[in-house]
Image 1 (cartoon, rainbow over the protein chains, first blue to last red):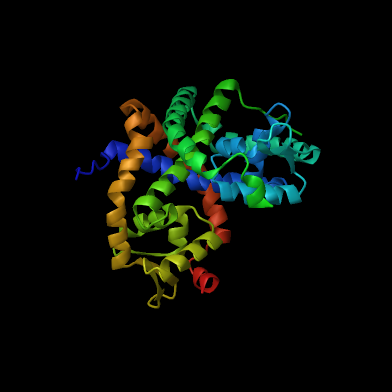
Image 2: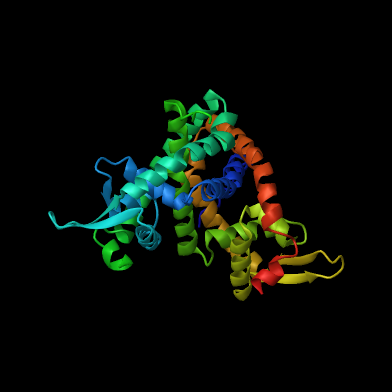
Length: 171
Length: 171
């Protein structure tokens, strides 16, 4: 049995600081979106990914990897967004590789309407209170942590979100 | 109407980096806990707060502020944790200020058993891949963002999580 390497005071401070804003930040951004637009943070996240993809559609598995969501959450959420006509599911018959999720015109209008207020909130809570140097380190830290999670998530995604599995799950 | 101040490339990079690891990090830590212990991340978060509080109990409203959760999420989660005997709800009859949530002996054992594996995962995904300088800036950034959210959250919490409201909600 290996000895547990507990966090040093400096490490614990950084971890606590990161933890301390994760949930409140998500809650504050979600509240802003729900108050000022017809979208939740989860809707926004899906629509950003799709709207920035050439053609506006992605395979379910790719959308799962882009959002980092697990299969059941993604399935249920896409189904609800489809009912509100923000996205549509399209069979990808040409190559037999399964389901595509596509942003609709209504989805594009919704995210275009929501974006200015959302950016303003992101500035207020995060960007505008940090120095350029802090932003630079935050980018480096985020990219390093993101990379450390990639192998982990690809592994989990492979067993969890298949490109062709969402259709059955969510229908 | 004010012009939207869209993010500059450096700001967008920092924001994307922060966003890119939030959900996958939460998912990876939750998976580790669920695999190696009997706790979810949400259980762990509640038990950490209570176990570090002298006496092991907090008013529901204080627990809501410490976790940053909204009332309905907190109510439902505490109810589920109580059913699993990880916490218990106690009336605070002495001062009429309502419900206390207390960690049980079983809750203490659960978090003591889960902590070593959780710390190892926190090291693997975040702490051990960052330099001491990055950890220092991360702490500063987290504390600044946390402070920017405090007013926002206190306001939301005041209308959302009352000290005495959880009992009715969750019973």
